[in-house]
Image (cartoon, rainbow, N blue to C red; front, side, top):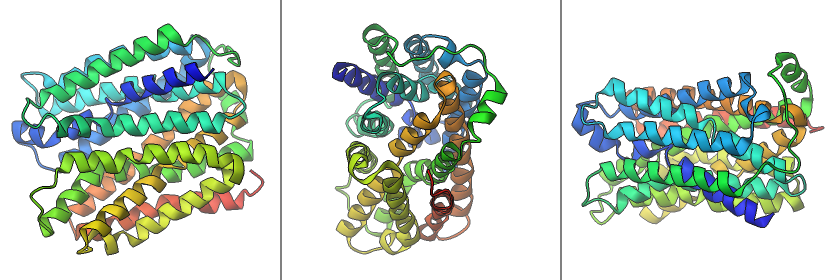
Length: 387
């Protein structure tokens, strides 16, 4: 069983490296295509929108419940890798770029939520710990394009697209060949909206879902704008030795450790209680961000971003655990997928909102807005205290 978890985690990491591949090379794409820096929000929102529509279609067709999850993961990984290569097209235009990012996101819908489904089919006891590793892999995968970029500064930027697509193909093959259907898998039939709606009448499930949506309001906007926070800080406090891409990687990637730690801590503290504590800490980070983003101390700035990165993601496996545990077995895959879909819809709103205000006012005060989601999530979780 430990071998299975290792393979799922490794495959998830390799495949989700596609997620921010476009963001890592966006400065080069901006220069090549003659587009504005605001395109960062559009590019990220495009892949998020693809993921949303993909998750909806996967759920409507009950793909994760009707077919082998490992096969679904494998095919999705291949298709996502193929469309990811579109960023390297010789005749690339802004419209084509948005399209290939959208299609990459569409097939990521068969990777991230399906990976959670596969883990839930293998682990009922200790699911929180397992999902801690799994979401940690997502974090590393998300950060990894920045790492590749930092070490290919003297190579063509196209290497980021080639390498992340190769990783996705490898991850898909590994999972398909080495992870058969889990012992707790319950094969579903067709998508039934009434069954899904009935499931959400469970207050424990609905509370976990709203807590997750509040968490997502903050998470992807934070990840998207970490490079901008860094660039703005060093514009005001120059340090020519700073490698922006490498620093972005470390700040985002450190969240993977928090995911693993929260999975273990949930056994002692309790999944719901720990998720509330972490959500509260990330709220404080949002509200206090202006103090640290303009702090003259470089060490203080870096430590703040590292801590924020830890708490912005640490509750993700906890919410995933609550949602998976409260979902009926025969529709678990579809429910996880729908909750993911709504969560990523929320990310588009927050990313676009931050992007709009960044161009209109002082950057350091903008990220207070990200506290709205965690505050709503906390309120609802406490209201439904029986979860």
